[in-house]
Image (cartoon, one colour):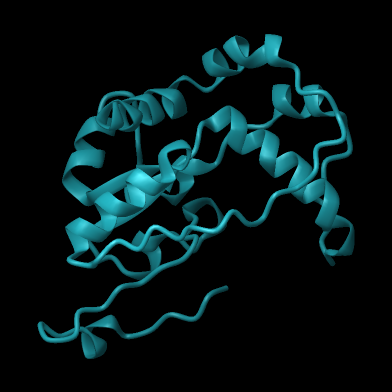
Length: 176
């Protein structure tokens, strides 16, 4: 588990605190579990279909070296897509539903970026946080894909993951 720090001791108006990481409420280290007073957030979302595909290939490649291999896919990509839900909403600071996702996005987030519009997202985040944007974003962490992606399944995947797509499309709409 990540180490908890006393944010009240570290935060000041002259030197504001910025926590970062992959908080995940399903794994019992959500931001609300660790820092219930935190109330301003920044995140970057990715198309849930692409997120799951990327996760499959990444974990398949590196997971063999993990002590806990239970998360390493044992099936082909199509079977994995049919049986795996995106986990992006597990990282949100509050529970997200079809009824409240717009309110959560507007109330808690300073900005929600989009991976497919990364430079524009980072510029908006930098501006809102009072930083100069440096357009030098490297492209790292690419995993080779050794199986054909079942594009004909995307519509079904969207239906199976309606909430994730509602959130994603709502946030993407702010970049069009």
